[in-house]
Each structure stands twice: as C-alpha cells, then as structure tokens.
Amino acid sequence: MRLSVSIARSAARLVLANVRQAVRELGAESDVDVEFVDDSKKMELYGVNQTPAVVLLRYQLKSQKLVPEVSVIKEWIKDL
Image (cartoon, rainbow, N blue to C red; front, side, top):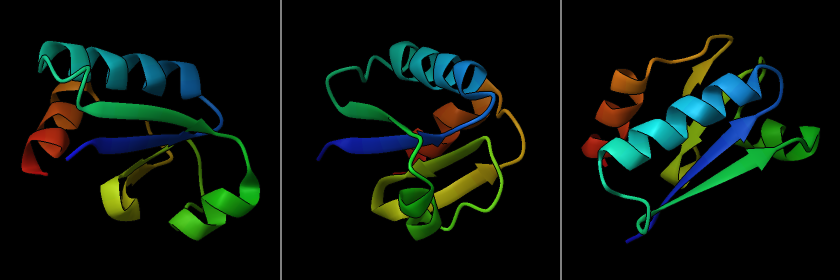
C-alpha cells in the first residue's frame, strides 16, 4: 500500500524538505507520494486550521503550526 503525505502552505519548503529526507532515509521513495496542497478547501477537508501542516494517509492530521523534525516524520511513516 502506498502512503500519501500532504503538506499545506506556509513554511512548506522546510516541511517538504524534511518529509522528503525522512522518506529517503527510510528507503521508501517508491512507497510514499508527497503532495503539496495550496487549496484552502482541500486543507479544510483535511482538518487543517493552521499551517504548515502534515497530513498522512487516511487524512490523519499529524502536525500544524510547526515544522516537524525528520526523526518525528520517520516515526509517523513507520507507524502506518
């Protein structure tokens, strides 16, 4: 099963870099799709009220209003 990670808006470059690094360090590039979301309606559907935000498979909101560390993102991915 492929994992989908969505990243919402501001500070997205930092979050995107951390997510990509976590995926790369886990060797999961072929199993994880990373999506940048800039559509406020789609973010609302994900439950995002503040950005930056990370949403994992099944639209599980994992963080908002902070840039999570690579080690934290790796644990989220491993838990799925």
